[in-house]
Each structure stands twice: as C-alpha cells, then as structure tokens.
Image (cartoon, rainbow, N blue to C red; front, side, top):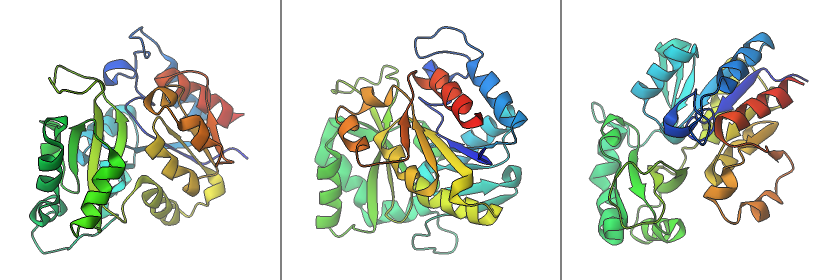
Length: 270
C-alpha cells in the first residue's frame, strides 16, 4: 500500500549540510530532496514536517516547500491548514495568558539543568527565543542523568529529549559534539503528535510513514507503519544498531541526510 502521509524531521534528514535542501551531507549540490518531494506529491503522499524547530521557522520552511501542516518543538505543537489551526499537543498548566515556555521556566527545571551541567549545557541562542512550548538547549550531557535529576527534584511532569547532533557554528562549548536538547512536557513527543494528526486527518497508522536521523526519532515508529532512519543516525548514536533489533518496522537507509530521505521516498513509493 502506498502511504498517504510522510512525517519527516528536517535537520539531518530532509535537509543536508547547513540545513539546506540542496546540499548533501558533505556540502555538494543536489536536487535529490526536491525530486523526492516531487515524487511524493506525484504519488499522493502528503509531507508533514516533524521537527524541533519553532512554529515560526517551520512556517517559513513549509511556505517555501509547499507543505500545509507540521509538528513543531519536538512534538509539542501541531499546525494544520497552512497555519490556520494551531494545537497544543501537551497542555502544561494552561494558565490564561501564560505560554507553556514561561510555565516551564517558573518550575525552576531549566535553571536546575543549567546549574547541574554547567558549561556543557546552554540555551540554543538565539533560536530558543522563538519557542513558546519548550526550552531549546545545546551541548552534550548524560541524558539519563538529566531526566533522573528532574524526577528526583519533583519535575517528573517534564522530560529532556535529545534531538540529535547539530552543526557546531563556533559555539565554543567544551564538548566534542554538540546536540540539541528540548525540555518538554512528559506527555509531549513526535509520536503522540503524529497520532493526533492522523486522527484529525481520518488516516490510520498503516497509511503513514516517517523519516528521522536520531534515536529520539524512534518514538515515531509506534505511530506509523514504517520509519526510515538516515545513515547518519548511526553516527549520532553508537549503540543504535542494538536498539534497532527491538523494532520490526524501522529501516536504516544506506545514504545520509537529504540523499537518504530521497532513498526512503523511493522505497515508500514502490
């Protein structure tokens, strides 16, 4: 069965080096991504972004690439009908006139993490300033330790998720590899946001596929019939192959980033 919708991460998946649709992982020019989007459209497969980017940034990406709906801030918010419908996927507090970002800040959880991990963790400035539903950070820390700390200090309704490796643009952090982290409500995630979107679209899990590039993207697997991971996913997570043994609907494509996305689109289109 040809799928009806493809949910895809952007950085490191649909996009290549520098966040460009027209650059391979090594920076060479390519039309693979544009041709893959054209293939999807021709086969009746609607593309929906599922990214850690803010609503504003994804809105611009969607406008340029002709996409009508997207999941932003690591699954915290779903935008449909070209921005006319915005749904909070993981309500947190819901105080009138107060953003989820501010409510999370008031718990003290972000300050706790920044204090504990010091120079190895910082806000992903300036991009975090766009976020209204989550706290975007960068660095390299022990994720399990961070989430144990949150629970131990009474912040079990929040979680820190690793959205994968990001390009180091001279951040000057004392880490060998920079990752993007999102502090979000525990009930949030790309998987649950996909389930919400499918329900609103009248589609089933069997009609959906997804593409990603990180271990965190594996949460999408439960919401779709097949998840394609880009080849660079193994570079981002040394133990990924062992983890994949526990999934029966995840495929690792042979190419990285945008070329891997094109490979996945061809497989999905048959």
